[in-house]
Length: 153
Image (cartoon, rainbow, N blue to C red):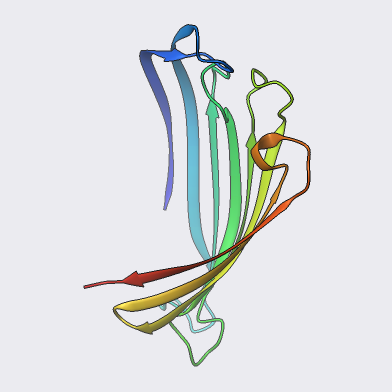
């Protein structure tokens, strides 16, 4: 799956950082893609490694908190052969914070998770994230732990 495009909006938006003034419209571009690059059981099978990447740019940082976003990662379905539907994933994202927000630069996030599929209707995903410069501000990094549960009926 691959995609790219252009975005535009001619509405009026609150300007950063205080929102007291208005600025008209913006334009931007985006691209995303993912591709299964390795299938140990052969073509047409679900088990294997998928890589992905994404990019978004907004040309007007006076109205966009994160005018530049880049992400990349990989997922491996069936890493443990006996658990063919489980998915191990790792990803990194970078968000460049608008230069109209004083003192902020960029935020980086590393995410690791493992989706345990118990039945076709139930999956549990423990999740780990580490965030450098939360909100784009200097300071200690933050660790976030979570668990997602998915019930499909």
